[in-house]
Image (cartoon, rainbow, N blue to C red; front, side):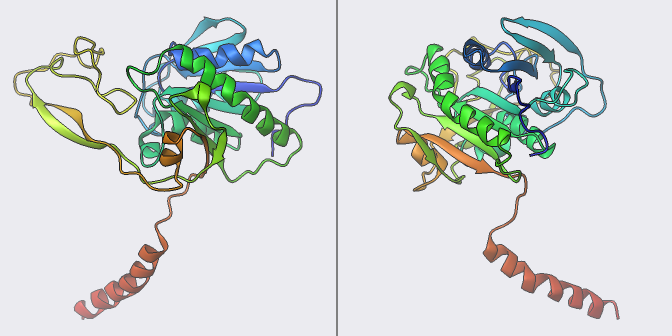
Length: 308
């Protein structure tokens, strides 16, 4: 890699996320990394929840950055998206040097299948990858009624062997440059079945829309792609005023994802810690390429004929 771990120095790990700098998943990950005394830990994360913003970036407005006290780490909260935070954190504008590894997470909710497209957590890691920095996105499969905040610490501890292995490969300049990793941890993380290499599937929670009469009506869709069980909980966005001319609509979950064998979400539900290499390209399936290979030349010929 272009940025191998410096000999004699503790590796620098920068943490970001999409749930916000105060989220329990990020705080647990930072605490566990700091407690090992093996790493220099940096944090550059959104100042509020930015779940499901995908790889959006702030283009017009300046970003506001504020120092935040997190024991054992150098931390900043950013008024932008996960991709903004990752980009700023690796730029040497905020920190004096480039991190050896970027970890985005730990997200409250899994990021598998098509949900990877929506995920701000994955986008934080992808942004580092696009800039040549090794990166990992980490998500915990939070399930209401089964999970609790302590599970984030267990999830962070379960990731330590993989983090150590990745850093070792980076130091020895063997780590691949053409991918980054997406890790998902099962709900019963204390009894996980170990790491399992998987591929991205096509699972996706079925969503729909429902018209409402107020911003606070109904339940919120959480970053876990499930419905909040507390209807009184609302965000600042929920409470924003709207004139009577506006029609209001809210997303709602209408069905569980369809499972596929030997893919990330299926293996996660089986109790494995899934490790999925990802890239930034979005090539279509081979059969689609073959179809348009025939269609496109015909369109050009047809256009030329009709112009005569």
